[in-house]
Length: 233
Image (cartoon, rainbow, N blue to C red):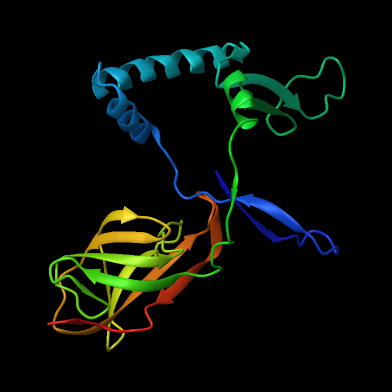
């Protein structure tokens, strides 16, 4: 696990806070794929079916108010808000049911043994340093219309809630053509298919709200262009 230090702006003292560098987010499909690479005794369909049944039972236990103790997590409940008298009952406008999720035995044991590596802080802004056209095997010079290309740099990942986020080719008249197919969307590498482009010079533009932490977005869209132009013959 990687971490970096950032200036502590919560106090007037000259000190720093540690932040975990999150480079990717693993979802259920990715976990299943990793499982099948190690052992393929059952199919993905079977695993999904078992997990869905497992989730259904967990949800039912939560609905019933059962505390749940699992190797990976513990689930309990609390109610916030004040009741004026002992005859008062739960109301949505005054009270709230909290579902508390805490790490289970496996997580607690793991946290004490995870090796940590200090790294340099990630750049504060997006930077596109390399644009490679796969067909012509050229870098920072040309792009094939509808061809596959690769971006390299820092803070490239395209993510967020705003409708404008995305990867664009910007023509000399500032017309934007959006890239519709992203194959790899990472912090330091993006692989995508170029849209249909007419001949001419283009800049590549990234619009994103992504931060170093997955699921945490900037309030505004960050817009970054290449400092060089790419030619489409």
